[in-house]
Structures are given as structure tokens and as C-alpha cells.
Image (cartoon, rainbow, N blue to C red; front, side, top):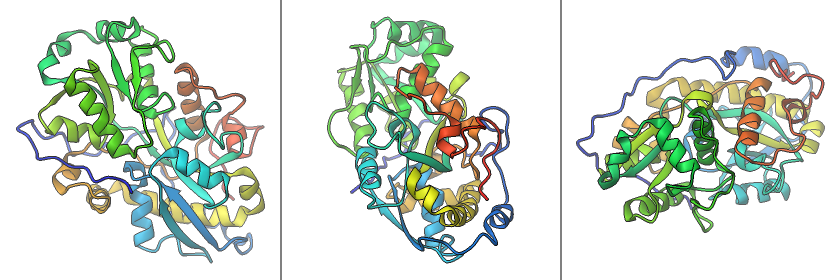
Length: 362
């Protein structure tokens, strides 16, 4: 099962707890009322599959969903929704492919990577889960190697792209790697895909364990720098062992889409009322993400210590699917060297004739 995280707070100044209201990746507002979504699905008939299971991995992106489950928001309109936790995206994808779950909440980068994903060509995006916020992805180094922090970002990115610095990431199809590649590109130093000095964490580990392995690799000197995302970034910084060199949630990676809800295309096509009803409930759950207190409560329910939940930087929780957001993450994946094939916002929303704008759910 997913590992608990948390570390005693250090003397490092607390990071800002202020939540920022922002526009979407291409300037589109992602806020929508649950009433509008309910109206979209209302009158379209009863749900075809009343009992559905949503698979997820413990993460910031799952926080509103878990709150919604706890509050019974999803058991409306004839639906009975249950949640099942998985350790890795690979386990999540396998369960979706085998139809053991009907919807998967996972990272765009892992599920849509044609080379490694079991389901990339078989899914539709039926909901957005989580977008990065300011400083939710960071490049870190050991405190005794903090002289790197004095280097300009362009020089630091150039050293990584030039293979002069070893860097640790969870995997090449992880949002951490895509954020690193996007940042390097914005610093005029495109990162060669799968270069030898980029070290991926080995083994079938959950996100918390993977982050700890990256932290260990950096502090031991096995690599010079690593990439962490929240809440593991704050966890590592508050340990006093690491310092942050660069905010990777910036430039072209600002507001980067991180996680979404996916269903097999055949299931979505056969169950339009089920999906529409689920989305109406999802909008209500995502709205809970506007409350810092609510998200902290959800994080603590995921075995994250209260003091860490209170200082973690939190991103954004969109309420509707915006095709431009999907095109954004596909563009970032392609630029990072991942294989996306013919995927587009159109193919992933079941509306190939429209690759921009707001997806209609009803």
C-alpha cells in the first residue's frame, strides 16, 4: 500500500499557504458550476452501469476525489462509486485494461505515453484532476552541494543537458521528467531524451517511496540533482538535507496538466449517461479543491503529517475537461521525447473534429 510520508519541520521559512486563482494553460478558465454539469446530463436517461470503481494513486491530484467519496458526492443520480488505491501507474493501467476498474485517476504522462502504457490508444479523458501550481515541481540538490544554487538557470540547465550533471527522476514517462525537460527548454538547453546522466528510479515503488529514493540518491552523492513534486518537495526541503535550485513549475511548464480521469473508449461510448453523471459529481468534488483546509484534511487522510500538509504548495483542480489543456500536456510530452502517436484532444475526448475549446459533457 502507499507509504506514509512526513518529516519534522526545519528552520526553513514556511512556504506560502496562499492559494492562487489562475486561468488555464491557454488562458481558459476551468471553473464551472456543478449545476451546469448536472443540467448537461439531466434528462438523458438513467445510468447504464450504476456500480463503478475508480482506481487512483495517493497524490495531491486524488485529494478532492477522496473528499468527494467521503462526503458521498459520487453516489448520486443512480451511481454507486467506490475507490481502489494502487501503488503505481502500471498497476492502475493494468486494472483499467483488464476492466477491473471503470475509471482511472492517473498521470497524463504515464497513461498517454504510447511506448510504455497499456492503454494509451484505448482511452478517453473523462475528467481533469490536477494541474501544477507555482513551485509544485522543484530541482533539488544536497545542502553540501548548494553552490549549484548560485548558478544562473541557463547555466544549470546547460550543464544538465550537456551531461555534466547527473539528475534523478522517477521515470521518463513521469510528470517530473516532463517538467524538467520543459524547464530546460525554456532555459535554451533542450534535454536529450534518455541521456545517460538522467537516472530513473528502479523498482515497482509507490510515489512516496520513489521520492525517498530520489532524495537518497541526491544526498548520497550518487547524483548531483533530482526532481521532486509536492508534497515530497516540501518534505525533502523541510528535512534540512536538500535545497531547491529551480522552480520547474514555470515557463512553458507553468500550470502543467499533471493528472486526469480516464475510461476505456468502449466503456465511455457504451455508457454516456454514466460518464455524464460521474462528471457532474466530479465537478462538485473538484470544487472542494478551492478550500485549503479541505485539501489539508484529505492529505492527512492519505497519511501525510499535518505539519507537512500545512506547508505543502498546492496546485489547481479543474472542474471540466478543456481540450486545449490536453493539447498542452501532449505538446509537453512530445517535446520531452515521449511517444504520443496520433493522440490529440479530439481523439481523447471523442470529438476529433474539434481540437480546441471546452468539451461538452452532455
